[in-house]
Every structure is written in C-alpha cells, then in structure tokens.
Image (cartoon, rainbow, N blue to C red; front, side, top):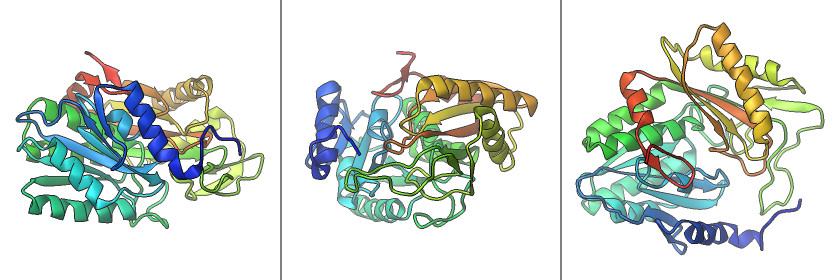
Length: 330
C-alpha cells in the first residue's frame, strides 16, 4: 500500500504537529497527544472531553473548539488513549463547572475513560460520562459489549457542546448528550477494507465485487456480505435498518458520512438516495450533513446516522460552532 507517511511509528505525532501548524487557535501537546482549545478553561463553562484511537479523523481533534469539544485525546491508530491523557485533558479544561467525558462504546475506551474519571475526581474535578452506542448493525463484537459508537458521536459532541456554551450545568449537559444518543441510530457499509500504517495492507479480506453491510469503523464485520449493489439499493438497506430500530416520530437530523476514501460526488449521490428513502417512509428531514466526519482510514464506503430532532435539539444543532472540521454561525 502507498501511504503519505514517514514511518508507521510516528504517524500520530506527525499528524498532531500538522494540526498545530494549521490551527493556531488550538493548543496541541504532541508529547501527551492532547488537543485543547487555546482559550481553555472557559470560566463558568462545562468542558467536554472526548478521544479515541486515531484513524477516524476529523474525529475527535477536528471537533475541538467553541460550540463543541474543549479537548480531545488521540490514541495510536485504532487504539484507545490512556487514562493519564484523559486526566491531563480534564485538568487543562476544567473551570470548576465540571467535565463531560464523551465515550464511544469500545472496550478499551470505556475502561480507560472509567479509570480516568476516578483519577480526575480524586484530583477534585467533577466528571460526568455519556456512552455513545448508536450502531444498529451489531450488538456486540470483538471490540464492544453492546452496540458500537459511530456517527452519533458527532451529534452528541455538537449538541452537548452547544448546551455547555449556553452555560447549562453539568447534569443538564450530560442529560442532553444522553438524549441525543438515545435518539440516534447508525448503519455503515464498506466497499473496500481499510489499511493501517503498521500493517501496510488491508485489515480484512473483501473480494472484488462484494461489499460489507453493517461494517464497523475499525473494519469489524457487519451483518452480511453481498454482491456489489447500487447506491439506491444500499440506501434502502441502510435507512431501513436504522428506521427498524428508531421511531422518528418527527423530523430527523441526517449525517451521510464518508469512511475516508469515497469522493463527495458519490456521497452526495448517496445522500439523494437516503433522502428518497426517508421521503418514501414519511420521515421529514430537518438538517443534513454530508462529508467525511467519522472515518476509517482509507476505507471506501459510507454510513448513515439519523437523530430524532425535537425543538431543543434542533436549536442546539443550529447554534454556532467553530472547529477545524465543523463550523457555522460565527
């Protein structure tokens, strides 16, 4: 595989140095692999901290900034950051109003964030946690106990971040985050396998002419493999899988997310098919976001995430945000 890297061992710190060079509004601690808002801590404001394995960019460092995360911790590729990173990040952004940990449901992330919460509380930082587990494709895998955390992470971080920016207290910000997760479901499709820098080759075998329905963001197996399908057919399967597990009962937020190697030309075409299916199912769309937001290195494919959007969640979604990867209203 051809990759734009130096050596596999320095992929993450090299990327962090690049983030620092491109975004002076962020403080990037390359040694400890933490990205923080330069104006943190913000007086009187609940702080949001998230993180996970690298390889899913722009998740999470790309979402650090006003209206979203206060800090993000980067692990090795597809590997959880360690508790000491999370404790350091929490200490850097805590203003005394408390810190919300946003945790995707993967075993390493859950264990390490749980340990970090205990350590941070021992140091006097008030911590709340929300677990993101939106993937309807698989209820358990080698990575998880229960559903995997995928595209809804963006919805949680954006909407809870807006609530924190409004000055809402920690218990309220955490409650909003948990409601977003409860109202969200996702389903992903892989057209090719991803390749990690350390391996330098595809992480799983996906023969030519086949696709994986329900794939995870680390290349975990999904529900089934089928011969290659059209965008229209994939949208039917993906949206129906989500709606089978989610009663929209009103308008939805739509995320059509690229896995890292699918051109926007294809993603927008797929988005048209997603909207077609939702229209046929009588589900109104409140807002739509299309692009690469929760990726899997160089995997070709896409995921669909729907979130039920009541009046409060829609207001918080529309609130200003200014991060490297998501910005509007400022």
